[in-house]
Each structure stands twice: as structure tokens, then as C-alpha cells.
Length: 442
Image 1: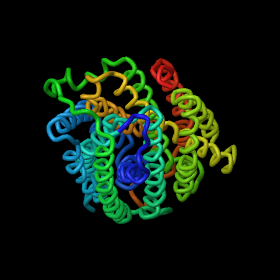
Image 2: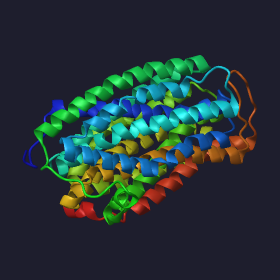
Image 3: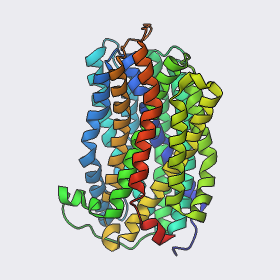
Image 4: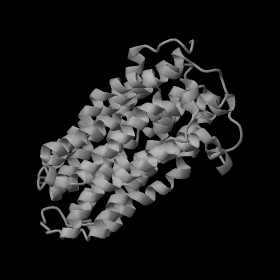
């Protein structure tokens, strides 16, 4: 297929469907797991933060290793789908996260969740790494990669919206319970499996339509091979900026239930805030595709990052500015979030393709490092917010137990949701400005 040609919409939609399941895995634990640990299972914020962080440390090496295995599969079999099929066990781990045996509370419950989380991270890598290598595998151009990832972002946003809204409702809305969380894990896990299988079919179709020349994989899956992508300076700056963005967005997700309950006084507003964050992202994605085509991906991304900082500052003022203003600020974050998912994910295959033949033979390794950064951000975000709760003296509790939090805890709940994300996003912008490849490609 010629690099100037366009991919069929049906194939892109099937490919993008795989992101529905991935969106559920990224969103629901990021949104509810910290709260589930501290306010349902009576796990202290410090321990809960470690439960979310420690399993991700292994991902730094695990994801590039999975990427190397994916590259080896491509060279040996002509496709990466074997690992993706293995990754379809992820829904079982997702359900297990919330199916905590009734007798477990505190540290014992934390241990159960940690084991399920480690298994889920491994299965997530097995699916996500080869899945996200697909745009770099295809013989398509700069703008068509943006168009393909635009389809993915729209479907991903639908998955985030549906899972982010439905998960709190199934869990119990105003009064979440252990049984409610267990039911939520089973229902959403089943839906994940269906969409992940559709995504595999989409990968098969697109790689048949726009195949790249056959490649070989060099070397064994040692540390030097696994980290080869980080020798690419363009990739280093891009992935460093994305790590900061991923940390920020996951911090915001983890903070939403606390902000709704303790700052706004209504736990049910969790669903409203999630919808205010995700729905604008769904509408904004096609606009960001047009923006990227006109001014380039990197300038569009910098605009989005600046908007995210502005919206975060408003949230730092809390209920004093009024609920409509806060919902508007969350909507601004959602619009920016759309660009922060679309544009970096379409810039990553640009880097791989620009690195020459040696780079394309290691697309899986590049993607493995990328998803390791995403997973690390997914852990660091909740951990940073858990640290804010700990500094504020937040008191953990079990389901059905009312605890009066101190004024300091309320202050850290608010600042952790507003000031900390703004600072992290400024760091992302500074790193992003060091990336120079985009101006040579557009």
C-alpha cells in the first residue's frame, strides 16, 4: 500500500475497538482502586499508594521485554497477534482486583489487590504492546497515522466514558459496597474480552492491507536491546514528556472520588466529573486531528498542555468558585486530554519510522518502552495523590463507616487535585519543547 493512500474506515474502527478494553483497564483502576483500598478495604493511604506503585516498577523492564518478544513474533510469524491472544486473559485479572474475599481487610486485602494488579499488568503488556506497534508496522504516512490514531482516540474515549460513568454506578454510586465493586468487576471484565477480540481482528485486517517489508530482529532480549529505543534522542524527549502527562492524568482520575466526596460533599458527583472530563474529549478529538494537519502535532500538543495547566489552577480553588465553574474547568482538562492521547500516540510511530530500517525492526521495543512509561505514570499518579493524602493526615475507613477528616486533609485533597497536576504538566511542556522531529516531518 502506498504511504499516501488512506486506510478503510471499517478496518480502522475494528482496530480501534481494542482500545475499549484497554480504556477500561486504564480508567477504572485509576479512578476507583485507590478509593476502593482506603475507603472500602480500610487500607492506609501510604500502603494503598505502594500497592499501586510497586507492581509498576517491574513494568519498566517487563514492557520492553514484551516488545522484543513481539518483534521476534513479527519476524518469525509475520504478525504480532500471538501475544495479543495471551493478553485476552486481562479481564480475569480485572475482575479479581475487585473480587476481594470478604474476610480480608487492611494489609491482607492490599496483598490480594497487589497480586491481581501484577497479573493484570503482565497481561495488559501482552496485548497493548503489540497492539500499539501496529501504526509503525503499517506502510502509511505522517497524516494517515494521525487519522488512524484519531479513530483509536474516539473509541478509547467512548470506553473511558462508559467505564468511568458505569463503574461508580454499578459499585453503588452514593454508597459503594464490596459486593457492588465485585459485580462491577465481572460486568466490565466481560465487556473487555469482547472488544479485545474485535481489536485483534482489526489488527489482522490493517496489516494485510498495508504491510511493511519483512524484517528481522537483532540480538537477544537483554537489557541493552530492551533499552535501545532510549538511545534515540527524539524518542527520549517524547517519552519523557508522555511520562509526565500520564502521571498527571492518572493523578486527576484517582483524585476525582475524593474531590467529589470531601471537597464538594457529594460522592455521586464522581460520575458527573468523569463525564465532564471525558465527554468533551470525545467531541474534541476530530478537532485535534484537523489542528494537527494544519499546524502540526507538536504545536497542537503544547497548546493542549497549556490549557490543562489553566484548568488545573481553577480546580485548586475548590468549591469556593462554584460547581459550574469547576465542571467547566474539568471540561477544559478533558479537551486537553484528547490531544494528550491522540498526538503523542501518533508522534511515537513517526519517531520509529524516522529512525530508519533498524528502528522499524524494533517497533515493539519502542512501544514497550512507551507503554512502560504509560504504566509507570498510571502508578505514579495515584501514588503522588496518596502522598498528598498522607501529608494531610487522611484517615482510611471501611465501607459504611463515616470518618471526619481534618482541615489539613481537606486542603491536601484540593491542592492535590489542582496545584500538583499543574506543576507536573509544566514539566511535561518543558520536556516536550526539546522534541524537534515534528517540525522536520510536517
